[in-house]
Length: 415
Image 1 (cartoon, rainbow, N blue to C red):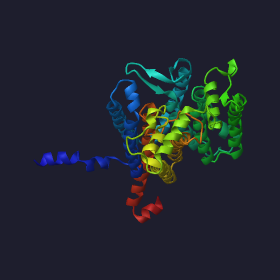
Image 2 (cartoon, rainbow, N blue to C red; image 1 turned 135 degrees about the vertical axis):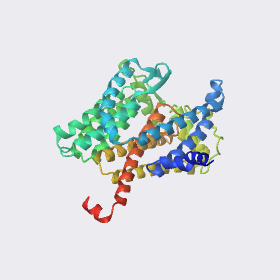
Image 3 (cartoon, rainbow, N blue to C red; image 1 turned 180 degrees about the vertical axis):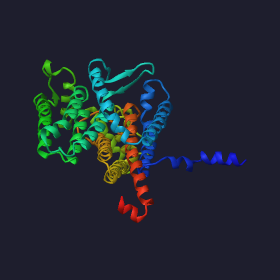
Image 4 (cartoon, one colour; image 1 turned 45 degrees about the horizontal axis):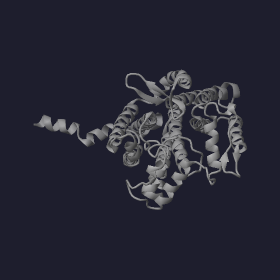
């Protein structure tokens, strides 16, 4: 009888919580965002289920499975000592480069873009850019921690840091320009925090601005403001994704014209209907008209159903997540852990802010999902890996603080 009581105690919720370490606030954020994901995904997939003759509950069940597996990934990633990620960073980076090249030429085409590769046997697809981003930030954090003394030097410091960023962004850009720009921006923020010379960062920004300005110039040149529609592009500009990029810039720049983006207009309608308090859970109307209401434009559905108060709450949660990660970075005694937690938190929060900005028409349409809320995919799992690594850094910081607290005052002074 006593043995049975002990067995029950071992598997009680309280005993399970003891094994969950790291920043408890971040764990709470994960729970809140995933619970919100279940509500909004279930609400926004009704039309998709109808078109594909499937039950709406099937997408809810699928999302529940994603959340369960994602929680397992976070747990497994957070129990690994974060220094291990420094050892595998170079290997992951080397693997990601040929994977990106393979995707460009032989990737699975979905929505007119070769961003995915299909995994054999399990017959699932994943975006290689998700793996490449994770590998890049791990590798960049490792390089920053090793080049602290030469960080200001152009040849021995800056070039050693910028070439992996340039390589990954160049390989991602042809099929996913928005992800390449966000990855590059996050990397430059990390370099700035790592005390890289401002003139070197400014040089990179100047070089990156040139193709962006060219695209904006093309978009303006081939748009007829009188008739309110875009003009046909020359044949050499219709190759690859150039035409899509130009159309998105035109839709953003001329949003008040008759032929502006259908997606943007429907998102605006959803936000206008939501008002301050929203229409209520499951009462979205825009889900029947808005393309991808369960992924790219899920934030518009949140505002429609939960109002501006709900939308502001989601924004606050992501900013609070960033605050907690910055706190972890400040407490981490080792450079690699500090840079790693900061890089991964910045990329998740910047991705979230970009998705929200697109939904409220502050940025052109990008196709970037809302971390932990949009319907599950490879991006969801890699987001969970990133959060697990951040929690791994937090767990080790807590253990160091715990050891210091257990020392006697004279032992702390001597250490």
